[in-house]
Length: 286
Length: 300
Image 1 (cartoon, helix red, strand yellow):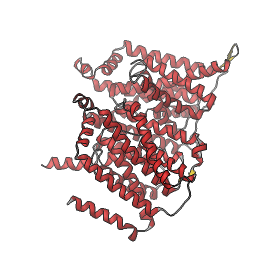
Image 2 (cartoon, one colour):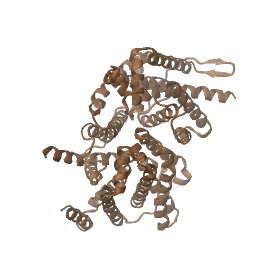
Image 3 (tube, rainbow over the protein chains, first blue to last red):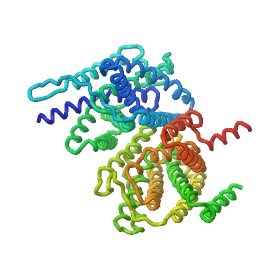
Image 4 (cartoon, each protein chain N blue to C red):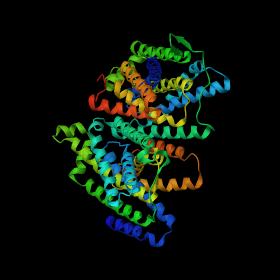
């Protein structure tokens, strides 16, 4: 029973980390209609940035987050301006194909360059805080703190989308692009900001990721696949659905990993994806 | 003039083993392998408009089915048969859930299929020998394998040419351009989608079997690698997805670049590949074949 609780807590935390990245992917897809294949790689980049900050400047991951988040907003905006906006004028099919080619190219180049530039590609952070006990349960303070911050970030994102003008504009564009344009929303600016925000969210997930699990460059694409199953589960632009999907995936991975071994975790994500497609093709809440 | 050019190049390739060294023949073998995969991919990816990043999954199923049966002494006919039939079964099974997805979703879900099979091939070590790799009895097979792929490539190109001029080809392009409109005209898109995917899977499986037969040693990391998954798609795109000759042109270009890279540098080949993808996506999303046509339109 305690083992089960322990596993579920681990799964929920993992799910929270997945959720941050999946929010980003979902927003980007909703607004720009671009499937960002390089999404998982931005998580890895965020994790590496955290590692570099920690190992050279001695900054704790949580302080690092304050630097990493805005830096990746800028990186995301830069990517959107240089590589996504120029192909906007294509027809729908060509745009889809070109955007997948471009983001896949980014993903391949980033993974290869990271693997090349790091002598030992697997990076972890030996940052830890004393665990505390709750009855028979041992709970890692680091994990709890991460979970708390993830919840805060998600709530912040929720408030941003619901209450601010910029957030409402994002939702409007997801809802109806032409309608949003007619209402005087600058769709180009919204697209740019959303890409920055989405990339920054997944880089923030990278900060939490590396403080718990070591990362290596080739985790990027499998992560993007997991994000995809999550947003198919939760529905595009649906934050609570995405969160639930992420937690379902995190918990099932944690349980399957315990009983059958961690090498099956991607298989789980995929089986869940297929099952959802068969039963509810529009997502759990669609 | 065009049939004459085609016949001449076919004859040249058929006579190549008498003039060229083994090195050239193995390069040509790699070229045909790439071209056959790209051409069979493009029926689904280019004509039908469903970007199937899981084409390597069919290739891999064929490669492994052939390898496992042949390594256990199952005999060649059975091995070849299984290498074609199993991908067909896989394609039929995945049609229903996967063709509920469109666009980017379909692309990424099929990509997941390759990742899934890579895990399965590594984890089910009893069947596939896992990451150790599967070995089949060796033999001198470069020339027969070369001719099989040459004939296959010629047949595929002819089939694609016929397809592009048939009602069936028209139906596929119509689905690519507006699937809902096709449905509204009383044509069920699913039958076309499922059928095209199945035929394309059978060809990929056959190519996989030829690969195992000639290379004699396969590992999950090689068969289900990123490069194999992305390769056919990229090649078709570069040459011109949905055109008859596009996949062939793309294969020629990519194989040349890859060989040059291999001679020049050991590292960062994937980075160069990635940058190339970005450039193609940004500047020639229609591919080289369409570039020529566009130029012609511009002049007239």
